[in-house]
Each structure stands twice: as structure tokens, then as C-alpha cells.
Length: 144
Image 1 (cartoon, rainbow, N blue to C red):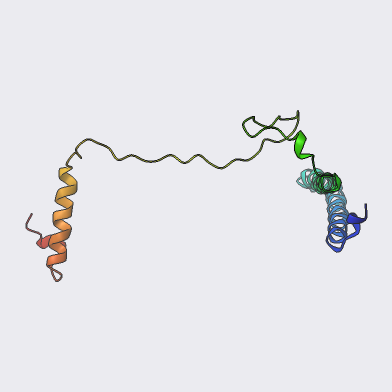
Image 2: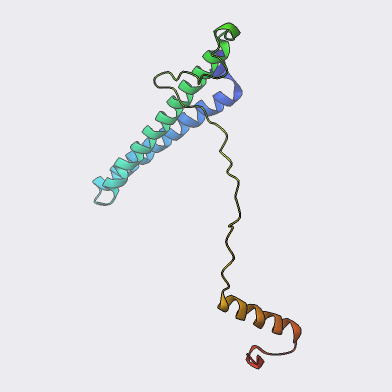
């Protein structure tokens, strides 16, 4: 549990405490405003404690994740004799995450058929080549 007292984790603990106390204080402030007659503040009075609960949940989840990583790092390496064979897929334990694999690359094959001529595209390309050949001309001067 010493890893929970590193400078990075101390900063996380302090941030969690400051945020929770701040959010609960803002919730209490909204309750006092709502009691004074501001009806919209009732919604905020519920919202701020929910934010505080979310901060506690994220902090708790991060502590659990760090504990799992620490436990996995402390385990001795697996015996190579117990490793599955190269051809067999690894067994997936219940509740474990699937392994991330490289994406499959698919080769693109050009179409074997003749390209269909697009008359509108050919006309537009002729227009662009005419504009390029006549740099001082306006688009309305195009003869086509």
C-alpha cells in the first residue's frame, strides 16, 4: 500500500477531498438558496452531491485499478512450459478483457472494367484547361 503515498497519489487524494468538499459545499449553498425562495436551486441542490459522488467513484475506481496493476506486477512470471502452444488461441477467463490485436489490412484491387466516361467531368476539365490557358479571361468569356 506504499504506492498510495507517492507524490502523484497524494495529489490525487488531495484533489478528491477538495472536489468533494467543494461540491458538497456548493450543494449546501444551493439548498439555502432554494429555501429562500429560488425554486431553480432545488435542481442544483441535487446536482452538486451527484458530482461529488462521481468524483468519489472515479477515485475509488482508479485506486482499484492501481491495486490490480501492483498485484499483477508482484506476481512471478509464468512458467514457459505452462504457456499455450503457438497455434492455439489463448484461453479467455470469465470477466477478462479481450486482447487488442492489429487491424486486418486488405489489399485494394483496381477495377478491371473500363472506366465510364463522365461527360460533365470532361466538360469541367475542358473549362478549367481553358481558364488556365487564358489567365486574363473571365469565366463568362468561355466559348463552350
